[in-house]
Image (cartoon, rainbow, N blue to C red; front, side, top):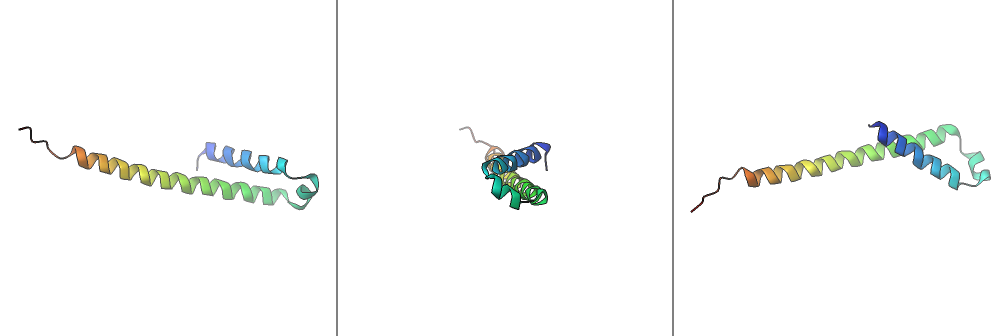
Length: 73
């Protein structure tokens, strides 16, 4: 998705990696950390798509209210 999302995913993985003890880090390969970053990136992209859908619904709702002519009596 966006470069921002990729950077955020990498920051999350790096934070997770730093939170692990040294012994636990030995059991997790670099490839697995990369898979985790990709999974986070995909989750962010999915949420972004959901937010876009919600925003489009709000815009449609607002437009439907504006499109009605007012009768100024």
